[in-house]
Image 1 (cartoon, rainbow, N blue to C red):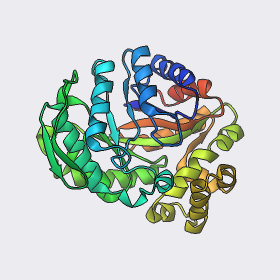
Image 2: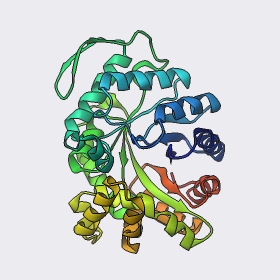
Image 3: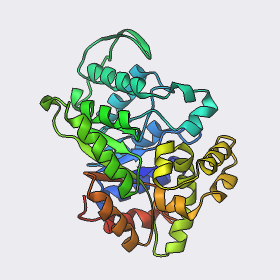
Image 4: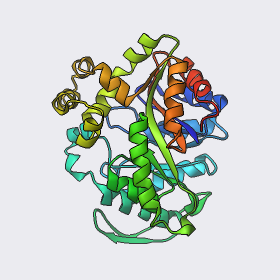
Length: 327
């Protein structure tokens, strides 16, 4: 599976054009990031559904803290209806840097994610739901039926060991936030542990590298464009991940504080070359292919994530060509 992440930090018409371009370039799925400080992802995905024919579409990733899980299920069902059965639910605990602005950083966790998508699957199957747990629902149900019913794939976004294992046991895929083969090798170990407890009836499971990618004909330009997403990744990385790559935790925390304060330029300036190497496939198409090939030894799929490159339009094509045949 080859997917691409598009971020609604740009005007929606341009994003729709990029999504159409991605479909033409051979991507299988388009995910939209979901951060309160960008444009609405559902408006973007709805417009893209009308402009495309084959790519799967979904949030990458929504979280159950900002939107009630029953409402989230309805949003995905609506997207499935608009796209004639092409929706996918990407769901995870959310970005800690932006959730901090909403006072929701303490709401992140495994149980809210699991309870949310299990509830969504019941609603998509036409059931009415009563629930008491990380959220409450009483006799909730949808008044319409999405085209694929309960067959909407669920891809869990996460990188902690328990989230990886939970996804392997209960979901259709794991969107693992990683760009380096060290991280994907570790993720594969966690997934294999979870798959040992997976019922056969749940079918196949994909470990998908949700990787920051910055590609351009100029290595220097690609690496410079990688600074913004690497800042967000470093800020939200767990201590074991930072340790795995020899990244100073205090430096990562400082970046996170700048991001939360909206001091983005200051945050990006603090990104080091080692952080770029650890958290992004950045460089020429040849460099990106080499990095992607190493990741493909452990992953079943790849999502080409932000920033894509210094020129978005050319990066959509360059990235697809760079990883052609690897996934």
